[in-house]
Length: 483
Image (cartoon, rainbow, N blue to C red; front, side):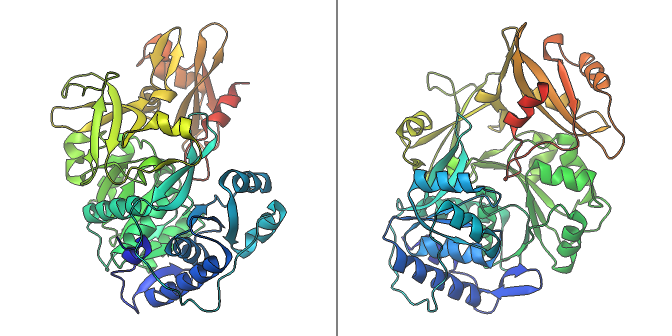
């Protein structure tokens, strides 16, 4: 097959915009040239298969470096921009990083970590070759079962397959333009880059989502047609911006993944923007990006479902003995995926790879049931279940109840050590605006709707939920709130 970078550039026309960054517009021609110069620099400093890191905000520097590394058949390692010196030094040792690209803000971090810095070459001419589908293209950092960051090895074939499937169901064309607020160090953010470039569309890169009104202004001025976010993205839009009051009529497609967004929040959005199609999606870094999606027209009757597998992804829900659970029943099993988007495994971690990657299939660790029509409904992650007084409890069940309180903007539930019950339920809640929240009111609300064993023993009111660089809830931080 062609190198995945060639596939991503196959559609974009020479003078059409590829990236919009502040007041600057980067055409496809300019981006191709920047990628070629980065690739030339990589070729001169490394050998095939070497790992080249990137430490940069979303911008031309990141995109050129990322695509240039893959174009030269080296392995790209995007690092979170908040990475500290010790983390960079640790990743360099673990993945054998040869060198790295960075933006000007992170030059000191790289130098302190002892990592050689690359800069784009003056010329970009180099010989191009086809690439075998199983050739590693990137290492994406994610959390393993221990919570320690692990490196998922994604191939050129993985990227090509997943990109095509996502771009197809989103029906992307050169007329589309995506507002990007997710970091490219996260597979969801990178999937926006892949899919829009592959269809000749453009991306608006905004690294200041905390200034949410400015982001909304930029959606209007640049006439964005697509927007993507994790639950925290949409909760911020709903609770702390004028998103619902604005007429964002250019938006035709909204993507949501990276966790469960409460049903009422989805309904709020679809009522406010009835012209836009809302895609609920499910995926894992271990599957490149996406595994399934719920067609927007099924929100009315399948709300709460993650849909069904993508065109080239087989999605099953299996019992422990490997047999499929009964559709239409309340039986729960593990989500198991197969297809060309399933990653190669974890970098230099055969034990963890053997646990989750088996015979070409990905055992996700997510538990689900299947309705009579074949739509999958997640129950929870197996590793996230709590055990209180010997009873298995799903955090998401408790979160769904507390999210129904009108004074609650966000909630996250975790288990904490408890001498009496082994584990106790802790709920961290973020109030709406300045309304405040009484922890006992939360417990009373739960008492009226849940069995006693599921009522939070600890309710902690916080200004914001702690999150990782990808916007996911940092549950290890929450667990410390009980002490």
